[in-house]
Image: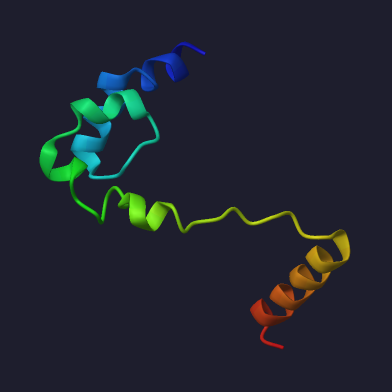
Length: 78
């Protein structure tokens, strides 16, 4: 738990973002992210894009089984 609390510290999460150019979900930490990274639309998507996103709903079990079966067939070359 100590590690999670450490990583979720706004300054720590911002430092990680500044080091690896990968966004984090720590909104209070955004103020500590460098301007180059914080304003880069390839790192942090603009609100106009985020507003169009949706979450995938869980699939019915029979659909999930079909999807898994088809994926396994594809991986097996058949």
